[in-house]
Image (cartoon, helix red, strand yellow):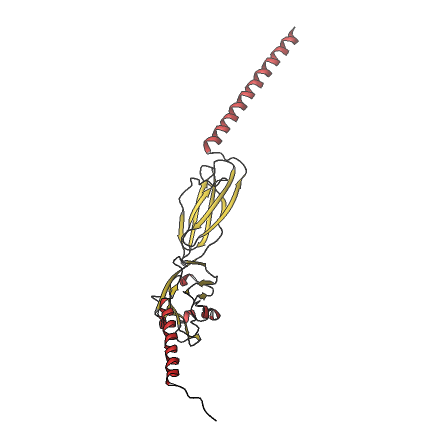
Length: 279
């Protein structure tokens, strides 16, 4: 049986085609950008969070090494995807079973990392590396803790009605505002802040109530874009110490005047009656 002969030119064409394809793929890889958001990613303690990062245009990196690190951490490796799986030996022990990549999405250039049940200590800068492509990008993670503020009545020495708003266990340190029913800021006392041994902030602020209204205590933290509010209705108009004293004096004067009038009437009535008996 005659065997087909491969001409030297055929082998050369195959090698040339392979080299051309490799050069094209290499060129695409060099032109691709590793993109992570410039704005910080915000998460609340205890939640899962995704640090998004991808190649543009999309390139299959399922067979490549993908490394996530945190500068300043020792060891700095948060997640090392190598040979198609997670390399536990290189991973920082504090992140064991704490992170994951979207393995099925690696073929689409998606190298985002998910962190499970984030803690305050997880906040900071993260870097994504693709060593074989010489690509690197960074992203910032902010972690916060919030709670709903509580409002209660407080009496002071002037017998004024005072409302106190308190919010416990915030991070980072929040701001506290008092607002009226129309959302206008109200003049109130200074914010009192206490930082506990757990690094969480307890804040409180007082408001002297001057009229009946719906009042709102707003606690907010702009860095983590979190706001919590509590509403409180004061049904009756409050009185200052001076107003109370004025009311008491007016009542006393009216009472004395009324008693005086009754006494004069009674005296005159008895005198007229006595005169009639004499006659």
